[in-house]
Amino acid sequence: MIIVSAPTPGYTVTSKDWSHVYRRIREACGIGDAGYVVREAAEWQPYRERWSFFPRKTSTEPFHERTDGREKGNNLLIEGIRSSKPPA
Image (cartoon, rainbow, N blue to C red; front, side, top):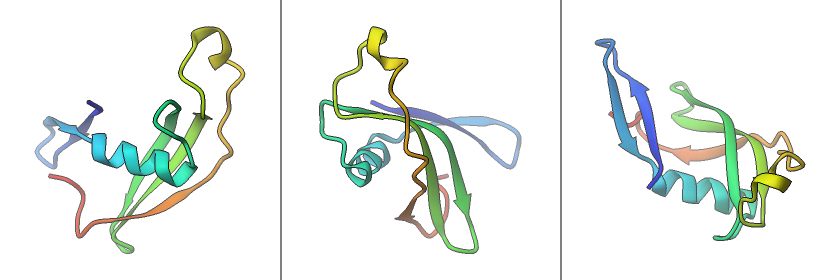
């Protein structure tokens, strides 16, 4: 399960299961089930009603601490995960 924390307008923090979103990010990067994506940032764009994701590290291989330091992202901006609003 992939859990993200999101601030609310009332200055509280909620936790959400974003496994389905993470799966779509991996698919957009061409990363299979064995690989991983570490994202640097995510931004909701209300005027476009889309999320943008900026991967920092991507790998088609399973995570291994010794080789992880050599992995890097391709500065790809992933758009198109469309929603009518950010998850509440």
